[in-house]
Length: 186
Image (cartoon, rainbow, N blue to C red; front, top):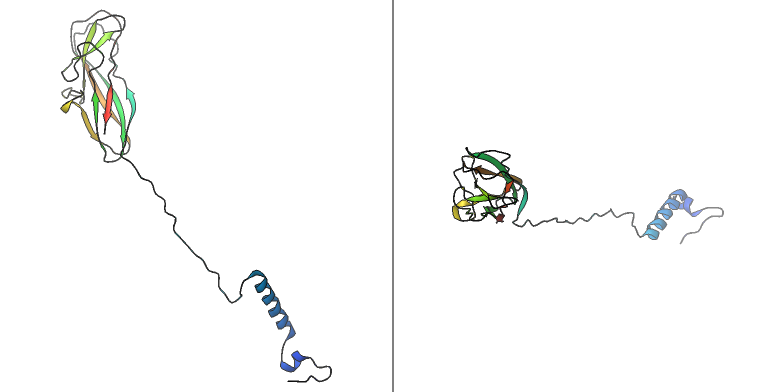
């Protein structure tokens, strides 16, 4: 035990500095109040967030541009026209496009120039054919080797449809048309 002399302070006798003790006491009070120890470092914890998507095999049939042969008088020479069918498939997805015979009576999709456009207000017809190549040698039909086969790139692709009206006996004047069903299989 120790005794202080009259008028002597404990801090002076033991070499304490009162300002240091006050600062130390304030830090201790703040640490206790906020549950933080001044001697501990800040801790950071991390984790991973995974982001996923599953791409299914798919094909979409886009814009179909008509084959329009325009206006003609006597059909003494072949008339050619071109349309297109837009297809978009996932990359690597194989697909086929088939064109049916159309609505014309007696039509056959798999025989050259054996589809028929019919007069809008009658029964007269104009024969025509649809092809997969500009040389008009590969029929475009709805069976076997007469369908278009392709592989998707991920982007929309316009596939040309080539048409030919061969020279033939010219029917009466008027507008002739046909509707061909496009079937996309993948």
